[in-house]
Image (cartoon, one colour):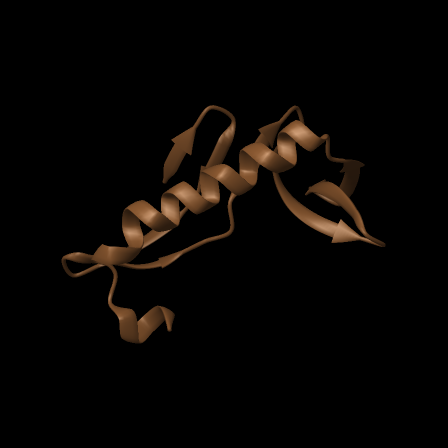
Length: 82
């Protein structure tokens, strides 16, 4: 599990390398919420409920996810992630 601020993502590790990165989400009062898009609106979805995501939340999740990929991707097996 990788965490920065309220953002987190699970990363699979097999053998001696990372093999996949799960979707990044954000910890909320209702637990881990994932960013999704519904009719063009950014939403945080957690345990069957959805609330509109603030622009700062969307930016934080995207930045975290991008940074995580840049950090881990070179160490992953390229055959497994395309």
